[in-house]
Image 1 (cartoon, rainbow, N blue to C red):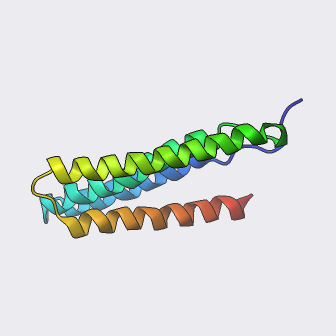
Image 2: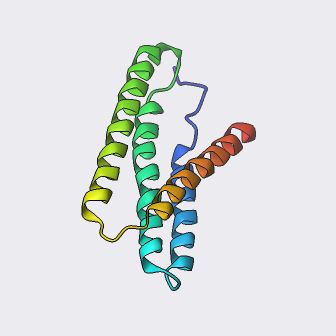
Length: 125
């Protein structure tokens, strides 16, 4: 028996975020290279772990898969948190100089872009 509910297109959300991030980085590069790569790093710190979470969380479909879905969400959220902490730690340790306002601003903006894209997907269905 085939599931009647399809998985949401969460991959498109990450692609949209990457496109917006790259446009911002390319536009800012001629003005300030340090801010541009700091913005790129901050955006990738948000996009990467969330893409990992989405991949795990939406791997299973259907009511019969509920226990697996719950485990995947828990595992995905733990992994997302760990990846985020590690990526911030690596950025702070190895990227010199880094423009912290740009790093954190792009991280936050990518979260907001994610919310709008997810709302669009939900409303479209």
